Image (cartoon, rainbow, N blue to C red; front, side, top):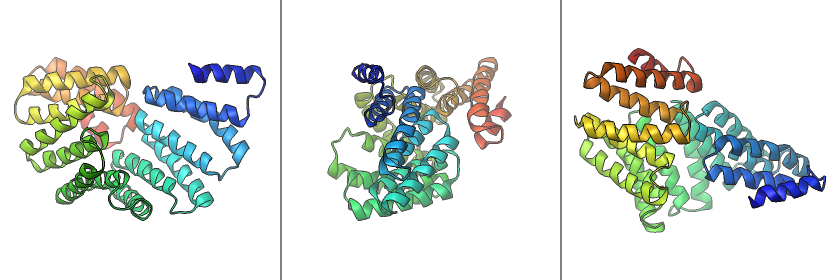
Length: 322
Protein backbone atom coordinates (compact mmCIF):
# COMPACT_ATOMS: atom_id res chain seq x y z
CA UNK A 1 0.00 0.00 0.00
CA UNK A 2 2.85 2.39 0.83
CA UNK A 3 4.43 1.93 -2.60
CA UNK A 4 1.14 2.46 -4.42
CA UNK A 5 0.50 5.67 -2.45
CA UNK A 6 3.99 6.93 -3.23
CA UNK A 7 3.47 6.14 -6.91
CA UNK A 8 0.14 8.01 -6.94
CA UNK A 9 1.77 11.06 -5.32
CA UNK A 10 4.63 10.97 -7.80
CA UNK A 11 2.21 10.77 -10.73
CA UNK A 12 0.15 13.68 -9.42
CA UNK A 13 3.34 15.71 -9.27
CA UNK A 14 3.66 15.01 -13.02
CA UNK A 15 7.00 13.20 -12.79
CA UNK A 16 6.00 9.88 -14.37
CA UNK A 17 9.44 9.02 -15.75
CA UNK A 18 11.80 10.03 -12.96
CA UNK A 19 14.30 7.68 -11.37
CA UNK A 20 12.08 7.73 -8.29
CA UNK A 21 9.14 6.38 -10.30
CA UNK A 22 11.29 3.65 -11.87
CA UNK A 23 12.48 2.57 -8.43
CA UNK A 24 8.89 2.52 -7.16
CA UNK A 25 7.77 0.30 -10.02
CA UNK A 26 10.71 -1.98 -9.29
CA UNK A 27 9.86 -2.10 -5.57
CA UNK A 28 6.21 -2.84 -6.36
CA UNK A 29 7.31 -5.65 -8.65
CA UNK A 30 9.25 -7.24 -5.79
CA UNK A 31 6.25 -6.93 -3.46
CA UNK A 32 3.98 -8.63 -5.99
CA UNK A 33 6.65 -11.29 -6.53
CA UNK A 34 6.67 -12.14 -2.81
CA UNK A 35 2.86 -12.39 -2.96
CA UNK A 36 3.19 -14.84 -5.90
CA UNK A 37 1.27 -12.41 -8.15
CA UNK A 38 3.68 -12.91 -11.03
CA UNK A 39 1.59 -11.20 -13.71
CA UNK A 40 1.43 -8.02 -11.66
CA UNK A 41 5.15 -8.26 -10.86
CA UNK A 42 5.94 -8.53 -14.58
CA UNK A 43 3.73 -5.53 -15.28
CA UNK A 44 5.61 -3.43 -12.70
CA UNK A 45 9.06 -4.54 -13.89
CA UNK A 46 8.13 -3.75 -17.51
CA UNK A 47 6.95 -0.28 -16.46
CA UNK A 48 10.23 0.26 -14.62
CA UNK A 49 12.39 -0.91 -17.53
CA UNK A 50 12.11 2.11 -19.94
CA UNK A 51 12.60 4.49 -17.01
CA UNK A 52 15.76 2.68 -15.92
CA UNK A 53 17.11 2.59 -19.49
CA UNK A 54 16.38 6.30 -19.94
CA UNK A 55 18.04 7.13 -16.61
CA UNK A 56 21.10 4.87 -16.62
CA UNK A 57 21.63 3.76 -20.20
CA UNK A 58 21.15 0.38 -21.86
CA UNK A 59 24.19 -1.35 -20.39
CA UNK A 60 23.86 -0.34 -16.76
CA UNK A 61 23.79 -3.03 -14.07
CA UNK A 62 20.32 -1.86 -12.93
CA UNK A 63 18.92 -2.58 -16.38
CA UNK A 64 20.60 -5.98 -16.57
CA UNK A 65 19.30 -6.90 -13.12
CA UNK A 66 15.79 -5.84 -14.09
CA UNK A 67 15.84 -8.15 -17.12
CA UNK A 68 17.03 -10.91 -14.79
CA UNK A 69 14.10 -10.20 -12.45
CA UNK A 70 11.70 -10.33 -15.40
CA UNK A 71 13.17 -13.66 -16.47
CA UNK A 72 12.72 -15.00 -12.94
CA UNK A 73 9.05 -13.99 -12.93
CA UNK A 74 8.42 -15.65 -16.28
CA UNK A 75 10.13 -18.77 -14.92
CA UNK A 76 7.81 -18.84 -11.91
CA UNK A 77 4.86 -18.47 -14.28
CA UNK A 78 6.10 -21.51 -16.20
CA UNK A 79 6.84 -19.43 -19.33
CA UNK A 80 10.34 -20.78 -19.88
CA UNK A 81 10.85 -19.29 -23.35
CA UNK A 82 10.37 -15.75 -22.05
CA UNK A 83 12.47 -16.62 -19.00
CA UNK A 84 15.36 -17.60 -21.27
CA UNK A 85 14.87 -14.56 -23.52
CA UNK A 86 14.95 -12.05 -20.65
CA UNK A 87 17.71 -13.89 -18.82
CA UNK A 88 19.86 -13.91 -21.95
CA UNK A 89 19.33 -10.13 -22.36
CA UNK A 90 20.35 -9.72 -18.73
CA UNK A 91 23.52 -11.73 -19.27
CA UNK A 92 24.53 -9.73 -22.33
CA UNK A 93 23.99 -6.37 -20.60
CA UNK A 94 25.81 -7.40 -17.42
CA UNK A 95 28.76 -8.83 -19.33
CA UNK A 96 28.99 -5.75 -21.56
CA UNK A 97 28.67 -3.27 -18.74
CA UNK A 98 30.33 -5.04 -15.80
CA UNK A 99 32.39 -7.91 -17.17
CA UNK A 100 31.85 -11.66 -17.46
CA UNK A 101 32.89 -12.41 -13.88
CA UNK A 102 30.50 -9.99 -12.18
CA UNK A 103 28.45 -11.62 -9.38
CA UNK A 104 25.19 -10.56 -11.07
CA UNK A 105 26.18 -12.58 -14.14
CA UNK A 106 26.13 -15.70 -11.93
CA UNK A 107 22.49 -15.01 -11.00
CA UNK A 108 21.55 -14.60 -14.67
CA UNK A 109 23.38 -17.82 -15.62
CA UNK A 110 21.45 -19.68 -12.90
CA UNK A 111 18.07 -18.31 -14.00
CA UNK A 112 18.68 -19.12 -17.67
CA UNK A 113 20.07 -22.52 -16.72
CA UNK A 114 17.00 -23.28 -14.60
CA UNK A 115 14.68 -22.43 -17.50
CA UNK A 116 16.76 -24.63 -19.84
CA UNK A 117 16.47 -27.41 -17.25
CA UNK A 118 12.67 -27.14 -17.22
CA UNK A 119 12.70 -27.18 -21.03
CA UNK A 120 14.64 -30.45 -20.97
CA UNK A 121 17.82 -28.91 -22.41
CA UNK A 122 20.13 -30.43 -19.81
CA UNK A 123 23.40 -29.77 -21.66
CA UNK A 124 22.68 -26.03 -21.80
CA UNK A 125 21.55 -26.04 -18.20
CA UNK A 126 24.80 -27.68 -17.06
CA UNK A 127 26.85 -25.24 -19.14
CA UNK A 128 25.13 -22.24 -17.54
CA UNK A 129 25.35 -23.69 -14.04
CA UNK A 130 29.07 -24.41 -14.45
CA UNK A 131 29.69 -20.80 -15.52
CA UNK A 132 27.74 -19.60 -12.50
CA UNK A 133 29.72 -21.93 -10.25
CA UNK A 134 33.04 -20.57 -11.51
CA UNK A 135 31.93 -17.02 -10.69
CA UNK A 136 30.57 -17.98 -7.28
CA UNK A 137 33.75 -19.86 -6.35
CA UNK A 138 35.96 -16.92 -7.35
CA UNK A 139 33.83 -14.22 -5.71
CA UNK A 140 32.25 -15.97 -2.70
CA UNK A 141 34.40 -19.01 -2.07
CA UNK A 142 33.58 -22.70 -1.67
CA UNK A 143 31.79 -22.50 1.69
CA UNK A 144 29.04 -20.06 0.81
CA UNK A 145 25.31 -20.75 0.61
CA UNK A 146 25.04 -19.31 -2.91
CA UNK A 147 27.85 -21.59 -4.10
CA UNK A 148 26.05 -24.56 -2.55
CA UNK A 149 22.86 -23.65 -4.42
CA UNK A 150 24.70 -23.96 -7.74
CA UNK A 151 25.98 -27.43 -6.78
CA UNK A 152 22.37 -28.36 -6.00
CA UNK A 153 21.21 -27.13 -9.42
CA UNK A 154 24.01 -29.03 -11.13
CA UNK A 155 22.88 -32.20 -9.36
CA UNK A 156 19.36 -31.76 -10.69
CA UNK A 157 20.64 -31.19 -14.23
CA UNK A 158 22.86 -34.29 -14.16
CA UNK A 159 19.88 -36.24 -12.87
CA UNK A 160 17.98 -35.06 -15.94
CA UNK A 161 20.71 -36.69 -18.04
CA UNK A 162 20.25 -39.93 -16.04
CA UNK A 163 23.66 -39.47 -14.45
CA UNK A 164 22.27 -40.15 -10.99
CA UNK A 165 25.58 -40.88 -9.29
CA UNK A 166 26.84 -37.42 -10.26
CA UNK A 167 23.50 -35.96 -9.17
CA UNK A 168 23.92 -37.48 -5.71
CA UNK A 169 27.54 -36.30 -5.47
CA UNK A 170 26.57 -32.68 -6.22
CA UNK A 171 23.48 -32.89 -4.01
CA UNK A 172 25.50 -34.10 -1.03
CA UNK A 173 28.17 -31.47 -1.70
CA UNK A 174 25.51 -28.76 -1.58
CA UNK A 175 24.03 -30.19 1.61
CA UNK A 176 27.39 -30.44 3.40
CA UNK A 177 28.13 -26.76 2.69
CA UNK A 178 24.65 -25.60 3.67
CA UNK A 179 24.71 -27.46 6.98
CA UNK A 180 27.81 -25.42 7.87
CA UNK A 181 26.61 -21.97 6.84
CA UNK A 182 22.81 -21.71 7.22
CA UNK A 183 20.21 -22.60 9.84
CA UNK A 184 18.65 -26.09 9.69
CA UNK A 185 15.30 -24.86 8.32
CA UNK A 186 16.72 -22.69 5.53
CA UNK A 187 14.92 -23.03 2.19
CA UNK A 188 18.22 -23.76 0.44
CA UNK A 189 18.48 -26.92 2.53
CA UNK A 190 14.90 -27.81 1.59
CA UNK A 191 15.82 -27.48 -2.11
CA UNK A 192 18.89 -29.66 -1.63
CA UNK A 193 16.77 -32.31 0.13
CA UNK A 194 14.26 -32.17 -2.72
CA UNK A 195 16.92 -32.54 -5.41
CA UNK A 196 18.48 -35.52 -3.64
CA UNK A 197 15.01 -37.03 -3.31
CA UNK A 198 14.53 -36.68 -7.07
CA UNK A 199 17.87 -38.44 -7.71
CA UNK A 200 17.13 -41.35 -5.35
CA UNK A 201 13.59 -41.66 -6.76
CA UNK A 202 15.05 -41.99 -10.26
CA UNK A 203 17.53 -44.59 -8.99
CA UNK A 204 14.66 -46.62 -7.51
CA UNK A 205 15.75 -46.11 -3.90
CA UNK A 206 12.29 -45.13 -2.67
CA UNK A 207 13.14 -45.29 1.05
CA UNK A 208 15.87 -42.66 0.67
CA UNK A 209 13.70 -40.62 -1.69
CA UNK A 210 10.78 -40.48 0.76
CA UNK A 211 13.14 -39.54 3.60
CA UNK A 212 14.51 -36.55 1.67
CA UNK A 213 11.10 -35.48 0.38
CA UNK A 214 9.70 -35.51 3.92
CA UNK A 215 12.56 -33.34 5.16
CA UNK A 216 11.92 -30.93 2.28
CA UNK A 217 8.19 -30.79 3.05
CA UNK A 218 8.76 -30.12 6.76
CA UNK A 219 10.92 -27.07 5.97
CA UNK A 220 8.60 -25.78 3.24
CA UNK A 221 5.58 -26.00 5.55
CA UNK A 222 7.40 -24.27 8.40
CA UNK A 223 8.95 -21.48 6.32
CA UNK A 224 6.53 -21.01 3.40
CA UNK A 225 3.33 -22.22 4.97
CA UNK A 226 0.97 -25.07 3.99
CA UNK A 227 -0.64 -23.22 1.05
CA UNK A 228 2.48 -22.04 -0.79
CA UNK A 229 3.15 -23.35 -4.34
CA UNK A 230 6.57 -24.70 -3.30
CA UNK A 231 4.91 -26.65 -0.48
CA UNK A 232 2.47 -28.02 -3.07
CA UNK A 233 5.38 -29.26 -5.21
CA UNK A 234 6.69 -31.06 -2.12
CA UNK A 235 3.29 -32.71 -1.63
CA UNK A 236 3.38 -33.77 -5.28
CA UNK A 237 6.84 -35.34 -4.94
CA UNK A 238 5.81 -37.31 -1.87
CA UNK A 239 2.67 -38.43 -3.66
CA UNK A 240 4.78 -39.86 -6.46
CA UNK A 241 6.71 -42.07 -4.02
CA UNK A 242 3.53 -43.30 -2.32
CA UNK A 243 2.12 -44.10 -5.75
CA UNK A 244 5.20 -46.14 -6.63
CA UNK A 245 4.91 -47.96 -3.29
CA UNK A 246 1.32 -48.89 -4.12
CA UNK A 247 -0.16 -46.66 -1.40
CA UNK A 248 -2.78 -45.18 -3.72
CA UNK A 249 -4.98 -43.66 -1.02
CA UNK A 250 -2.11 -41.58 0.38
CA UNK A 251 -0.94 -40.71 -3.14
CA UNK A 252 -4.39 -39.40 -4.14
CA UNK A 253 -4.59 -37.28 -0.99
CA UNK A 254 -1.17 -35.69 -1.60
CA UNK A 255 -1.66 -35.17 -5.35
CA UNK A 256 -5.11 -33.66 -4.80
CA UNK A 257 -3.72 -31.32 -2.15
CA UNK A 258 -0.94 -30.25 -4.54
CA UNK A 259 -3.35 -29.73 -7.46
CA UNK A 260 -5.76 -27.65 -5.35
CA UNK A 261 -3.02 -25.34 -4.06
CA UNK A 262 -1.32 -24.94 -7.45
CA UNK A 263 -4.59 -24.34 -9.29
CA UNK A 264 -5.48 -21.63 -6.78
CA UNK A 265 -2.06 -19.96 -6.54
CA UNK A 266 -0.54 -20.48 -9.99
CA UNK A 267 -3.59 -21.03 -12.18
CA UNK A 268 -4.81 -24.07 -14.16
CA UNK A 269 -2.27 -23.58 -16.98
CA UNK A 270 0.95 -23.63 -14.98
CA UNK A 271 3.27 -26.60 -15.70
CA UNK A 272 3.37 -27.59 -12.02
CA UNK A 273 -0.43 -27.61 -11.87
CA UNK A 274 -0.47 -29.79 -14.97
CA UNK A 275 2.01 -32.20 -13.39
CA UNK A 276 -0.11 -32.55 -10.25
CA UNK A 277 -3.23 -33.27 -12.33
CA UNK A 278 -1.36 -35.73 -14.54
CA UNK A 279 0.00 -37.60 -11.53
CA UNK A 280 -3.46 -37.66 -9.96
CA UNK A 281 -4.76 -39.13 -13.21
CA UNK A 282 -2.18 -41.94 -13.15
CA UNK A 283 -3.32 -43.05 -9.68
CA UNK A 284 -7.01 -42.97 -10.63
CA UNK A 285 -6.11 -44.91 -13.78
CA UNK A 286 -4.35 -47.58 -11.72
CA UNK A 287 -7.45 -48.13 -9.56
CA UNK A 288 -9.66 -48.22 -12.68
CA UNK A 289 -11.42 -44.91 -11.99
CA UNK A 290 -11.02 -44.14 -15.68
CA UNK A 291 -13.55 -41.31 -15.98
CA UNK A 292 -11.88 -39.33 -13.17
CA UNK A 293 -8.47 -40.17 -14.59
CA UNK A 294 -9.47 -38.86 -18.02
CA UNK A 295 -10.65 -35.57 -16.51
CA UNK A 296 -7.24 -35.14 -14.82
CA UNK A 297 -5.34 -36.08 -17.98
CA UNK A 298 -7.32 -33.59 -20.05
CA UNK A 299 -6.55 -30.77 -17.61
CA UNK A 300 -2.86 -31.66 -17.76
CA UNK A 301 -2.89 -31.87 -21.55
CA UNK A 302 -4.62 -28.50 -22.01
CA UNK A 303 -2.19 -26.76 -19.67
CA UNK A 304 0.91 -28.30 -21.20
CA UNK A 305 -0.23 -27.58 -24.75
CA UNK A 306 -0.84 -23.94 -23.88
CA UNK A 307 2.37 -23.32 -21.95
CA UNK A 308 4.92 -25.82 -23.28
CA UNK A 309 3.62 -26.34 -26.82
CA UNK A 310 2.16 -29.35 -28.60
CA UNK A 311 5.56 -30.89 -29.39
CA UNK A 312 7.04 -30.79 -25.90
CA UNK A 313 7.79 -34.23 -24.45
CA UNK A 314 5.58 -33.61 -21.39
CA UNK A 315 2.68 -32.56 -23.64
CA UNK A 316 3.08 -35.69 -25.75
CA UNK A 317 3.01 -37.90 -22.64
CA UNK A 318 -0.25 -36.24 -21.54
CA UNK A 319 -1.63 -36.60 -25.07
CA UNK A 320 -0.91 -40.35 -25.05
CA UNK A 321 -2.67 -40.68 -21.68
CA UNK A 322 -5.80 -38.95 -23.03
